[in-house]
Each structure stands twice: as structure tokens, then as C-alpha cells.
Length: 248
Image (cartoon, rainbow, N blue to C red):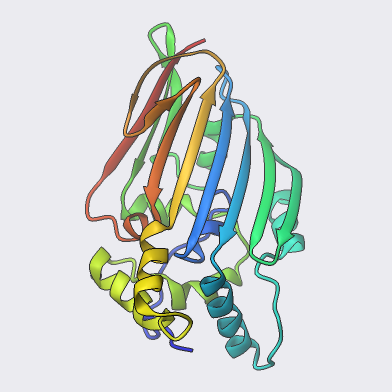
């Protein structure tokens, strides 16, 4: 097993709605959000880790624990405890479909308050825009650090092996090369690179109303889908803005 960036800790916290997918670059994450005009709503999250990442993460946990074992990737009790400590958001259901696959759903009272309580109020805003409603969120390195703040603290230990430094000193290409080097003992390099390049987070937002406009995504039926490659999200070179405007 090879560890990436072993001496430089990434100062990133894990946000349960996104960072459960970010703990491994080799994954597919889909989040479906239904957003009401008053800012309340619900979200369903699905995460599927590639077998390469499952093997690598198990080796990391074995190294940290000092005892060889087949460790669980997702700790349902810790996830549940993380939500129980927060007001205005309820964990409705959670299921570990397989060792590397997780499904969960939550319900929230106010999307603005949800992010404000996590110190990410500068990242997301939702409110009136004339007669419409507008959801706007901004991503940059600082926002990603504030954004990801839900999950248990012991996940931070994993982050130092998997995440690039938070100071922006590593580019996407450099991080890709580091991860490919760390993972090439689990499969051939070409396969590893394909897994890394394919890893992405798809956030599908379905407003309770009519879509008027959007920025940074694509319209699919009554929803807007924002697709963010994981490698780019972790090494953002500049600020990116995404938005959705809908008529109630």
C-alpha cells in the first residue's frame, strides 16, 4: 500500500452530503434534492465505491488500526450520531447496500439554516428573486473546506492520506498522478486513471415549481443536474458558481 501526501494534512472536513463520496476519488455519487419554495426539502444520496478504492481504503484502515481485518467503509452508527446532534435536519433512512455502496435520505427544514449552522453561509444562498426563487452556490477551495463538515472526526485521519493539501499547491494533474501512483498496485495504471477520471458527484435538484433559468448545470425534465468531477472539486483552481431559478 502506498500513501499519498503522507506529511501534508488536508484541512478538509467531511460533509455528509458530499464528503462521504470524497473520501475516495474512485466513486460515483448521486444526490437527488427536492426543494420547496420555502427552503425546506429532502435529499437522497447514493454512493458507489469502485473495488480499487475499497481495497485501498481497507489497507489504510488496517495500517491505522494495526490489525488486519475486513473493515466497514461506512459506519452507519457514526453517521446516525452525526445527524442526531444537529437541529433542523433528520436522517430518514440509511442503508449499506454492500460494502462499498451506501444509500441514505434526509429531510431538512431550511436549506439556508442548514448551511449556516455548518459555517458555510457564504457558500449557498436561497431566497426570492422577484416573483421567483433562486438557489445559488459558489465553490472554491475555502468553500469546499467549510462545505464539508458533517461527518465523524475520525474520518479526518483518512483525509490526510487521500486528499491533496488545502493550500492549492497541488494541481489536478499532480493530484491525479499521485493517486494513480498510490493505486497502481491494485490494478494497471490505465484502469486506475480511468476510475479517477470517471469519479464524479451528480447533484440533481428538483424544485417544487417551474424551472426558469440555471447556470453551470443541465436541465433534465423537471430537474437541473449539476455534475462535478471529484478530482476537479478537490483541486479547484478558481471560483465556480452554480444557480437555479424557479417559479413557485
